[in-house]
Length: 123
Image: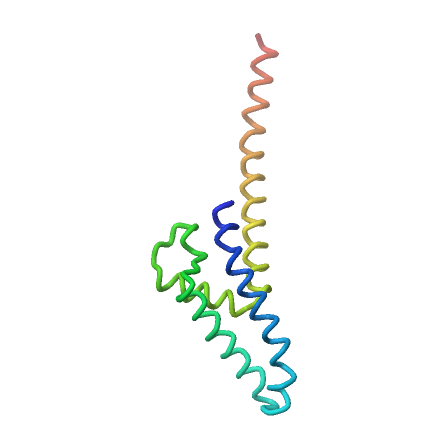
């Protein structure tokens, strides 16, 4: 888990930078493109995200055991293009997965603990 959080740090920073760039470009592009603004800005952020992922060697799937750098870079570029929302969603998912593992461990430990206590009383 710590390895994944460490891998997400640079991607989070890149996503934040893209989000800030969008804040600067939005008023300028909005005036010139009108209804096409959202599509253009999404394509710009996707392009920047992919460039950062490939050129910067950013990979968020590798810590999860997926060792295919091209696929990892594409997924990372998409996550970066999502800004901080993409990274936050991934971190939230990881938090849910961690809590689920804790709950499973507690559920498995409880019957064993009860059996040990019962065995101690029987002696």
